[in-house]
Image (cartoon, rainbow over all chains, first blue to last red; front, side, top):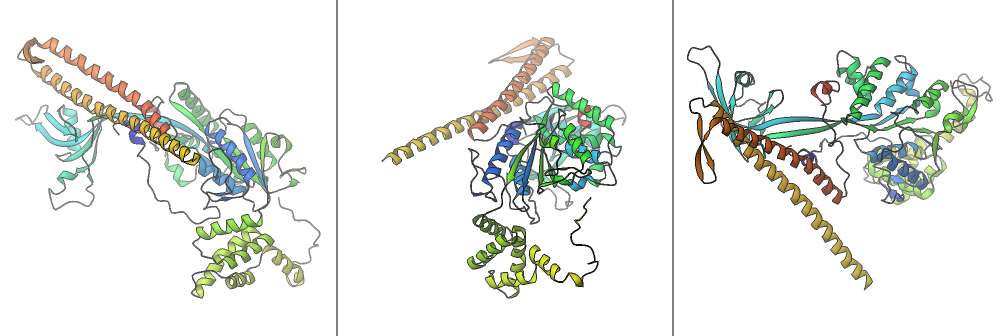
Length: 463
Length: 135
């Protein structure tokens, strides 16, 4: 930490994240080469070359911070990889750029208004980069010497010897430092840091060289290496926090706990204005950088007309993230009105969007995707079974075919086989109906079901 | 034949890049070592200042210049040491500042993005409180 920037390189948080195998857990990025051309199969992405290339261009612009306040619409048939592209963009952006993903229907909640939910989502997608700098003295305590006056009262004086692997020095101690050293129960062999500005002492642990001093050692005793380099170091830490996090901390008395409880409630607009002002001030003083992130709204046709007009307005604010929306609707009614519009989005908002469209997968691509999913789910499948499954994927839907992978694997395991065979696929195909066969079944046995007296011509009301 | 030539070209280019990277890395390491040496000097100077300022009995101190010990007035000695201390501090700040550029240069050679945010001015303690919980 002596050389903050150099050491930062190694300081990568190594936490093994155990992720559930989800529908898009195999996506690692957009699968583009350096020239932004889409590789046919890469990083879990298959096909959709045009859409991926377009997404790649947008991504580069996001990285350069050039397209704040723009919006993107990914439109396409169900199961053509819209969410996959958005996930790929999120993965490619890295951990430093905030990425928020919500489903369109998430904003309809009893606890907060639609616009509040949207505002929070917006502010979750804007990062503020700040730097913390502290001057610290870090070293291993070689010796503490405290002189007490013979009378028992009066000022104590003392000496503290600290060392690193490179050097050793003596500090004179005043009354206050002696008190805090005694309070922290610092003794020879401890590794401590002293904040230079406040004089706060932190015990990091005991030195490894003293590991065998006693046998009786508390379980919580932590052993650390003697620090390297200079004694007096400058520690610089860069944090990226989102505007929403700052909002929450400053709007509640209980502080950041509210962040974890999930119940943040509504945040007063005055608080937000104050924070905006503060952040703008920091920016002018060179203390902060704005990191426009990405807000992804899946199933955007579920938003209603009020939300759309809010989005229209919010996109124009100077601290707006990049908005990515996805929809699988064609020309349909805008929720909350009786008007029809392409993608269920009002024309004025549609006009501001860059539209990327995804196309249905071809047979080869479906096979490839199924193969990737098999690897992701640790399923081995014979070539014949794969061909059958691909056929199923072509005739029904990709999602249905993917569902069959896990189920077929279970059937295969039941007969103690390591590899999924054609018979397993056939078996699960007969066990689980796909959408069209289910419809077929319903049509045939309509009379046997309840409430079948509804006229079949009447279309379903969704909102 | 031409493939071999181009291969040779590739190898020499790669070597060149590797050399540059080593050079940049060496530069950073030597700067780090220099920071350590300067800090050692700084700590010694600080110790000396403490000793000199605590000594109330003599108004002159023995000071070593090169190979010679000279008796020097205490106030002058202290002023000299203080000046030294400040100078070392400044020099360390200078090196730390340059180091950031050097690290970014190395990262550039390694085809990595620059480290972000280290050129910002630090937030003060009160300002940090508003973003508490993440720092």
